[in-house]
Structure formats: structure tokens, C-alpha cells
Picture 1 (cartoon, rainbow, N blue to C red):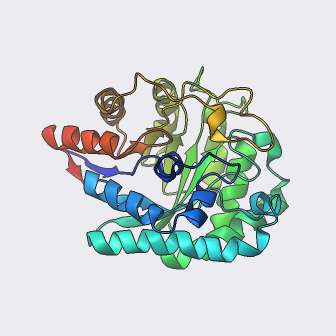
Picture 2: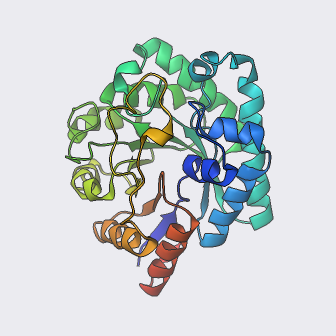
Length: 298
């Protein structure tokens, strides 16, 4: 049986839910500011559920996002806070790895907001440089276009850490990125920068198989972690979106989500987990099912 890397589930949504606060455009970053220790608690619960990776709460910590709220001067402090809470959870668990998350510039699902290549590369590189000394690997998450992928991977190229590329695809057609470009168009970028894994994330689970059919031909370890939204609404696709514009599904229980995840494993995926609107219960069910099927979780 193959070894399976079990990622954690959604960080941002889980943190916001636990905080009880109304979502803001700063999302999980604001909750981390207002509720010290909440991020560590979420990481601990995911480790307890069976995850072997703690994904840092740095997805939305970008200078461009902070600058809109007059908080650019807190960039380094927020990065440090997120990394410290991830490290504390790992130390308490006494095993596992830390993955440094780098989210999109501008906003999620908006490849049109990605700056031109040189500017984007430098912004991604600054985040990668801050993450690298404190993480085991870097995940470029919710990558929505080929240009976004190229800039993010270029920005991480000198980090000295393994880099995983996680792309988001159309909920209606998993063979296409959110930009409308075919997933297969990523191959040239993958061949240029050679990330250590290619993943599909933050799309509905029903879209994953079409994307995985394509990326498994790239010659890299691959996998998926889907979200639990009904879909990405038009109201969310604004310059300053908040997650309360999105609706959580009521038909994606841990058991049903694990059914999807085990099908991805059946396709050859070796890295699986959950994204927005999945929680520790989803990861625990995946871990249980993998164990029952004889897989080693590593």
C-alpha cells in the first residue's frame, strides 16, 4: 500500500467559526489578531484527528491585502504570530510537518487581480523568504491561472524548501482553472520550476477527478483537498469579499467527503486533505478510512 500524506482541513473557516466573529476581508488574519491561541488550537485538533501536516495561517497575509486596511506595518508580526502558533502545535504533538501557506495576491478566485509577473514574483518571494526558516515545505494555494502559477513558483524558487503547487479549478468543469485556461496548460510551468507535488484545492469535490486525471500525467506526486461551499457566488467575486457571501453545503458530511477522498486515492493521489468548510471531523474520518484500507499515513 502507498503512503498517504494527510493534510489538515480548512483553516480560515474553522478559525472564523470558532471565534464567533463576523467575517471581514482580512478573514482568518483578523481572527488571529483578536483571539491569540485560536490558531494553535485548530492546528492541535487537526493533528489529533490524524493530519500529518499543519498548514500555517498565512494564506491571507500579503502586503497588498494588509495595505487596504492600513495594516501593512504589521506584516512581519502577523507572519511571526502564525508561524509561532503552528510550531507550538507541532511541538505539542511531537510529530508532523509544517507547511507554509502562500495564498493569492489580491483575492481568491480572482486571477485578474494578480499583478504583472515581476511585481508578483517579488511579493511571493518576500513571503517565501519569511516562511522558509520555520517550515518544512511551502504550499502555493488556490492558484487560479497559469500566470499566477508561474509567478508564485518563481517567487519560491530560492526558498530552499520543497514547494507544492495547489491550483483551484472551475466548479463546473474541473479540467479548467478558474481563469478558464486548461489545467493541462500548467505542464510547461511545472516543467520549468519542478515543484515537488501538484495539488488541486478549494473547488467542489465533484470537480476534482477531472483535474486529477490531467495532473497525474505530470509525473509528480499529486493530490487534492476540496472545499465545502455550494459554489463561488458572484457577490464573492468582488475586490473586498468576505466569506459570508458564500454558502456552506449541508450534504458534505465527514463520511461523504471521505468517500470522495478515497476515490482520489484510488486514482493514485498520495496527498489528500480538506479545504474551506471541512474540519477535524472530516480529517478524522479520512484517517479512519485510510487505516481500515491498509494505507500508511505519513
